[in-house]
Length: 313
Ligand code: HMG
Ligand code: MG
Figure 1 (cartoon, rainbow, N blue to C red):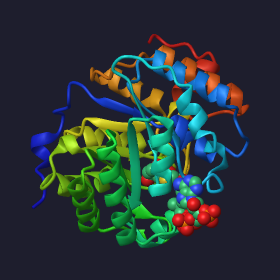
Figure 2 (figure 1 turned 135 degrees about the vertical axis):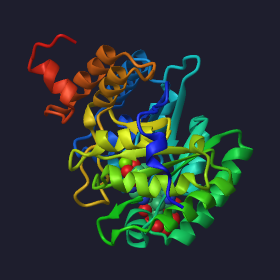
Figure 3 (figure 1 turned 90 degrees about the vertical axis):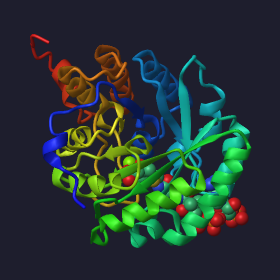
Figure 4 (figure 1 turned 180 degrees about the vertical axis):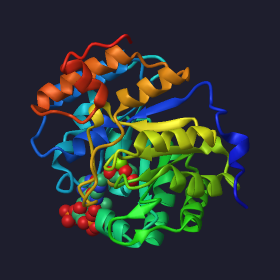
């Protein structure tokens, strides 16, 4: 059954939750190794902007993503603040062991809706990944952690093309059944349009409560913000984004950066949707990491400020 667009259009949520993934999804794609201290300064600046959920690093194999090999050191040196949740990506039981040792309290597991991508990304079939993550989630919860789940390539796969919405729904159900509290649906290569979001996410919402779903858009073709609006029309209230528009997946050819958090915050501010994030302070965090990386980041807001464009806002 198709959702009824005429009922949802222009009825936007009043408040949304932002999951900042810049220090993980953003930095994992950077070849030049950034110091642990610079990562910590970047994360603290993100915290100062009002972000309450920050994915700070990843416990994947250090050879797969050398940039995040210092995951333990990053987590052990984070400043803790009330109401703030730090999380880290975990690919398997070995990664969970390392995460438990670091003291992190929230992890994110990740599979995909495409067999080829899952194999290339984590060297497992989708079924193998679900078996692995069921055990990871069970052990994480019994160690006092909470668990988020990602599904990559929910709309288009760089190897298999179009992805069926039924497949995304089945994997979402499997992740929720194993104890994951939120499933982030990823447009890993940034190829989706608002129509794809409406069809796939709308279909999933016929079965799954909207509070369980987050959306994670990359911005290869510049459609990420439009996709967010489609998500807002569907009533989704959790969005992943990356400071400066950093990001990409080393195992997804053609994937460019995530939706820039400051471009998302501008849109939300302008629409009167509360996010709790201060746009100016967030832009300072992005300017900091842009300087460390020594190259221009894709965020429109950041470039507007750097180019000193005048504006009434
Ligand atoms: P594998 O080679 O199949 O692992 O890699 P294995 O289980 O066969 O183990 C081989 C060796 O690696 C063993 O060591 C393990 O102990 C060790 P040995 O006995 O030979 O000495 N090992 C580890 N060491 C440290 N940490 C670990 C770990 N696991 C095994 N966690 C694996 C499988 C999953 C580890 C690998 O393929 C991997 O790390 N992949 C990660 C790829 C990645 O990081 N991709 C990007 C993140 S996903 C993403 O960006 C998408 C997302 O943003 C959403 C979206 O945009 O769609 C989330
Ligand atoms: Mg991503």
